[in-house]
Length: 438
Figure: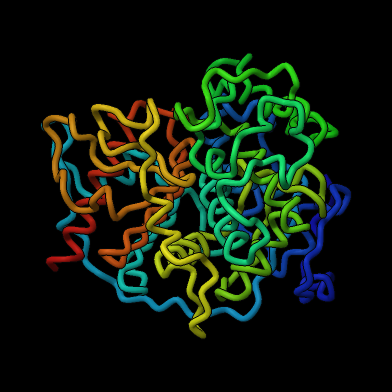
């Protein structure tokens, strides 16, 4: 690895606010030189990204906060920052019961390997936590929280008319899918993960489609490798589009690729121009790129500070409205994004109202969960959950005027919903209830 270079010596690059892709050769211990400040901490030894699904706990901490250094990335720059005020609240009364045991917020943080958490109530930071050496400058990777960012960008593209309708077939904007099983799938069906196209998301099977995608990302010619994996003429449909829900990072990648073709720029640039600078984010971020300056991955790979994760949650909470009153999202977009689809498998005994919207989850306390409390707090009809493997979260509730963001290194990528996801829904119910009554 190259010697450490102070960011001050790259002042011209750091002060530029134009979109810029950085080549892999420009990486060094000061992370990505195009960033206006150097995120901390700068870990010297990084885990091998091809083994991401089997990293140990410390590897996950180091790997997730150095994701932007581990892969090629496109920088999305901040402009003039809008202040995020603080108004500390006492959350000591926030507790929950899980299978007969009572826990408090400090227990939750420890039990769930939380490395960063922020609670924003009424537009003010009510509570903030950093662990494992993370701090306000740390860029943490989103994993599939990035899907919810892409979904929001799709909403902006619809508002701008760059995508005419969510019910347009993907092939209208992405001719690469012509002649494949994806040809008749619509933008809406990609948003809802109801394409009906086969995809194995298994995080424990080294032969799964997701594991193969991870290996593509660790190699060279990533865009070609991933596109051949997903837009494969041999990939078959198992159901008619819209009939069956099945979570698919392959479909999410295709949605991001289609969005980029529709707007004529990579995700990082579109995010910078439409949200990051207009909404007043405080820090630059980096998006995992498969072709720098041309294509960023739609399934994950968004890296930003905890504060700016929170600001993104506020953007959604405020229906995409800027400080000057301009609305960037279509009317009712956020409500539609949390209209849980009724396809087979989305509806279950745990979530009879449906589990998934426009790349946002319904992670309310399952209807069939026993010996847990509080079951009420953040209602399923008002709450969007952006969820990423190993415990990354952005939770938005417009009724409570509440945003909660969380970074974690769960021991499992996707534990049973009766484990950490349930514990999160209970804890966040307790936080909402405490903020309402204290």
